[in-house]
Image (cartoon, rainbow, N blue to C red; front, side):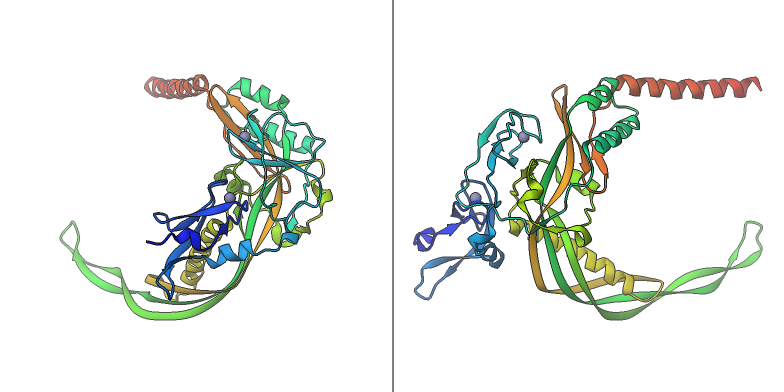
Length: 369
Ligand SMILES: [Zn+2]
Ligand SMILES: [Zn+2]
């Protein structure tokens, strides 16, 4: 079999390194950053095997070089522990990773510069405001150890910009379903006393129905962060990207740490598509006439798909408790907060004992009445 990769060189859409064909994964895999780009092997007219990459990968790689780079001098380091790539001003001296606190930072050399964000959501909340809301948040975590609450008040919170991909698409969907209409029949039955009674019973009449629906998706967000878990980010969304984004300007990032995206566009696009499909199904379900429905089938056609790389602001508090690592994330625009925290077994035990004691007391009171 001819060597398929020899036909043409494919650079990685994320870092610019030369990707290698992986037949098992049916993808071009970057040995430098691990980005997986879907592709397929096809036979050419001469019978040679050629690799054809996914159109989205080609579109991403085809973005001209003048749309890359930060337009300001920056230093990039990669954390050996959490893998996040941090980008900051050369004057800044950072010995620790802002995402996990590790000291194992190595310079990150890019073969090709990162895509410049098209736009960003400027940081709105100050460190003091964020500190206040974290304090309140901790105050409401009953089972967090007291030691942690004290630490949370003194530890540094870091302001960061994190990467997102956003997707727009126009969707035309056609659907079919069986609509169910309720009707009632009178049934006679014999009650416990042997008397004949009547009652109304609900029945469903099924009827075929169909329709079409158009929907425009504006700014479906997919996180491209390694430093903050996606589940945590989902909890502090939404970021008001449809109304509040401003065009990229290096001035906004001066003095802030920015995380460079690492989720490749293809993976992000596939994730966004899946979410849009689910949303279309919900929208169509709401259109089906009748009191209930079953066997809903939705066929969606996508057109005018576009994507953007944007940055959103967060404040991050990281701390270690025992051997475990915890993060508290605050939306730098809306103030929404999410986080994990260790639970104090001492406190939980006392709470359980208190509940048992209360139950015991109630029993005792009941007896003495
Ligand atoms: Zn790469
Ligand atoms: Zn790290």
